[in-house]
Image 1 (cartoon, one colour):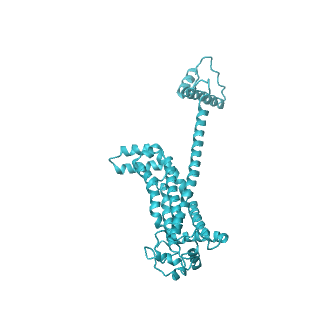
Image 2 (spheres, helix red, strand yellow; image 1 turned 90 degrees about the vertical axis):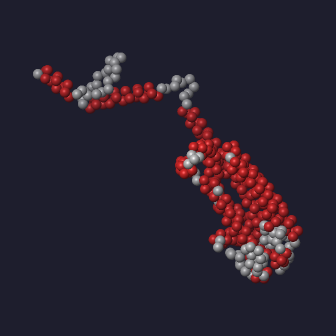
Image 3 (tube, rainbow, N blue to C red; image 1 turned 90 degrees about the horizontal axis):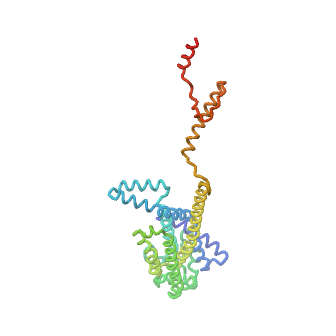
Length: 358
């Protein structure tokens, strides 16, 4: 059903395993662990631009929060009109609220795809999504892009004595399927690897949430919905990692830790870049105001007088140009005389003068 997700995820994981397996050995647990880590880095690199758009959209929504509140107050009894006005506001400032949650939405199918591919290395269980295969059939059945040899390599690989597809609460019958491929692992060996990863993942989730909350504006943090989401991100989500950790394979915990490490570094880089751009814009605006401001000691110029004087000068210039084209030398105005507007005399007046001469 979700093969369009499973095959790309398994292909990226296969590529990195081939790269690290060439150096560390095909059956090395560190080669498989690094393959999972760089699978995360590859996918997050693909989602880098959407993440930047998400940050910019969040900043814009925080800046427009006062206007949004005014619209909500003004059209509180007219939902349809409020929706129309909100769409106008979004269009004027050129942002799409969907970009604020797009990176998170895209990471969900990736997580589910990786979880399914990793579980499919050992299909001897009978739970949800498991096939109840025998250990032999499981080891000789390909797993999407991975061949049967790759499946056996994954089952053989150990990270400090723990298989990457094993988890603390895994049934003993499923653990016995590792017997021919590196031996049956103990629950203690799995716990000694899983528990530190759970703690690191929970702390990293909390730290990333705290860094995100600290960057929020005071108005955004005062919003009741935002305050509730902040509490969930700060305490509930990290606690969820600790509670759900015993049910997650070691490889998924590695995914979680590496994903949080990437998020922390990416947030620092992107927010620093955007803050630098905003500071440059503010400095440019201040410089433009300083250039347009009058110099110290200079008298302020009345723009209205300057415009009226310009109109009179233009009229005199036009009259002089007309006279020069007709072969008439324009007379210089007497001292103190008002400038003429350069209008031509009417034709009737000229005919009356001709009759008098006759």
